[in-house]
View 1 (cartoon, each protein chain N blue to C red):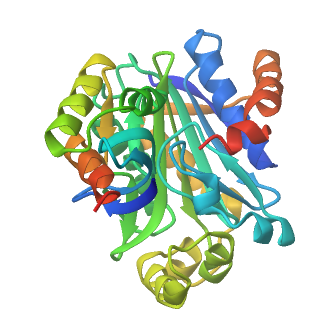
View 2 (cartoon, each protein chain N blue to C red):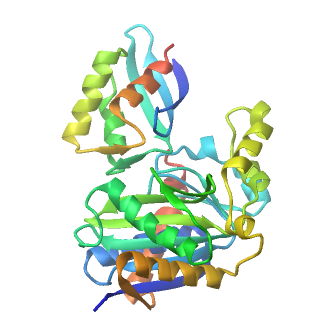
View 3 (cartoon, chains in turn cyan, purple):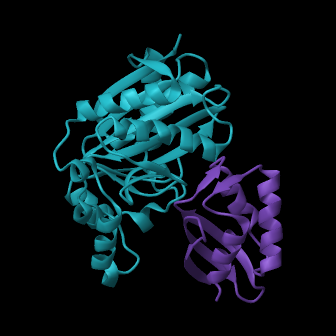
Length: 254
Length: 94
């Protein structure tokens, strides 16, 4: 009998709320209040998230973000800056001691990315996990992930690109040298792809999410049952939105 | 004296160091370790930055101190290591 985990589909939210929900689920799971949880979500408005260790001023063109109505947030996970627009974002929260999750961090990246690889395969895209935290297809990146472990609990979130606008992304990110901006853009275009680009057609978010759900079920031999955010998680989300991700002190702290 | 470096750690991530150092004593006043690497627990990076204050800017002193903090704080780096961090810091003073 397969174990039942919770599936959350929280739609599109602001950057601060998205990051607050992931953290709230982490806390609730660490306290044993909710089962292991897989979540699929989107961003509205589009947003840039930066890794915990990155310098906001160094990575993001805040003025262009404001002009284009793009949100920004610092994650609690490491890794790089990500422009979230046309993508499926996933997160998984599970106890570090759960038997389905390797204790070793790199092995656990591989396992969780394995679920995304299976999910992509379900819509006809063959891909592979490329350490440290990428998934590639035809040599190009289609997904990136970041993991933290807090309160004896694993949180990994990541992006699966549905479509990508490299020019827009670079208008929001700082580049080390303006003279090489065009070169950077063309390099990234060569290195990054998306579901739309690979399949040469648009895939609806719900179709992609269904494929990913099946991918997680296959990888972990579990059943994902649609659930809702609990009251406790809603309260924690509000707390983290106010006190952390929606707070400029947090976002500008490095 | 303020300085910056950008260093791609071999087989790792992009490390960006912001350093304020004392030229006379060749030691660190303060250092900010940024980049797209991973460190567990994340908060230990602030402890690392604190511990590096006043450390002499030579390879042996830096490596010793960094390895010491990694051990004491039980830090696991991914995409960064003590050698890479040392190199990134020393690049600021070259």
